[in-house]
Length: 416
Image (cartoon, rainbow, N blue to C red):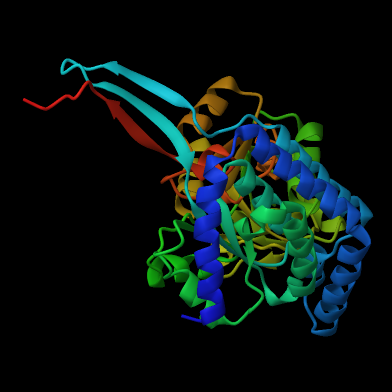
């Protein structure tokens, strides 16, 4: 292992133990200090970000991905507000659940504790740096951050401000500024120091961490998002939700990838939605009967090809398919879905069936998939959106960064 990286990992391990001994109010105070430090360093951070953006544009990076890494005053202010929101959350550490006194006279409690050292490998979005730092500090965890090369200058500026704010606890947030793939491979195998790895990037990054690493992995981020438009639906309101889910921000994991339309309403609300999306610049990838309906309505489209329905677009592209009924929609989502899936319907029975049968991290009823976010779910911020079931699922907030230990108390008690 690289000597400098191992030094960082050792320091993080020690810092995690120190943080775990601090009171909840002390950890909240550290998070508030981070918010103030980032605000004070705003000009420095924005200058560093401008360097990253210029390099990304010069390299030919797509506009959607450039947008993910670009900061301005409003975005940075939003990041700071998210840090402050984390500081105000209830302390997740030290929550005690009593199992009572057992027949042996042993008193047993379960107490929440930090995970220890959290490693995060991520790409593009600078807010990941501040969100994860705040959540880990608030929950008593040290964190190892390895961002992408495209945000190197921005992340350096952010972590410099964070480190200054933490003072004697600065080792609790470590930034790996060596962006070589070798450092990633070393991180995901550093089970001596890191307790969990959370990859925030494409599906390939998640597979790399799960298949080649020895550190436990929480897979997050990548996945295909669906909205099913039922035959019993308010056309005007459904249109606004679908447009929001697709175009409000295309480069994020909770943006809509596939629109499923009940065959009985394709020639009404379905074509109306597709026409609006097309006029907004969305490329429609249609299959089967959907392509015929779009052609009949003189709406531009391209024929869906193999693999499109498995694609997380992160762009102004959208799959469109007709389904015979809600059962077919649920089956389609079961085959291709894994992230955020919703239904637009005024039929209570259809809604109940969809909620019951769709097994996704988050299921939305008459709401945009763009709400799949820790801040929107009341978690303050998120480390990632987990698409697996163990150990946590959906937006990973403070509680997902904890484990627990058992405390068993006797009176010099021996087991008979």
